[in-house]
Image 1: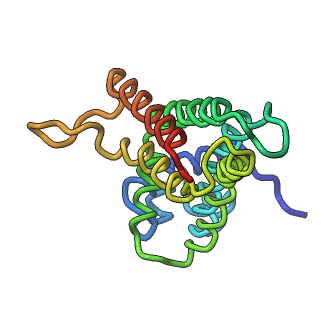
Image 2: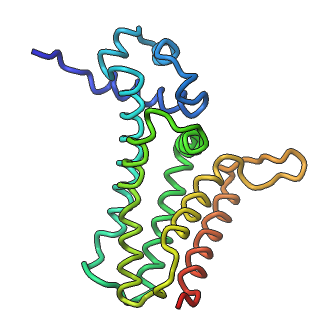
Length: 214
């Protein structure tokens, strides 16, 4: 009979691992360092989360499930089928973007981890990572395809390119913040900077969708 896992200990390990993976990368983060940072021994870490590979998949699942839930909440009020009102699409995407910005600001290690992984060479984690990230954001793709079907946006609207730019505009911002003309980097969590980001993303959404895509 398997021994029960302490959910609080597991949550603590996943929290610490998320931060260390974001700071050091997957390859440079050891279970020994994770255990020390979490205030546990290595055996306890392995007992609650398994191998480093299993721990990283648990980290990704927790992050992307949270994002999928946010997107799902925004999309839930929409009826099934084609969408013919561009205002509805814009409202959903702008609201989703604002919610994602709040999420990234509350856990800045999240976008740092994503960016590090996207720029790292392909490894044994890549197939799982690709699947879970695509599953989380497939909802937005389906929304835009339904908007094309209903005529809310033009037939040639580049859904995949739009979504890639939409994602990088939000996540990439948190790597450096706006340009500081003395030090290059600036604080991405400064409230006025975050408000500027919200306005820029909203403008990107509105102007991209409203353009003539014949």
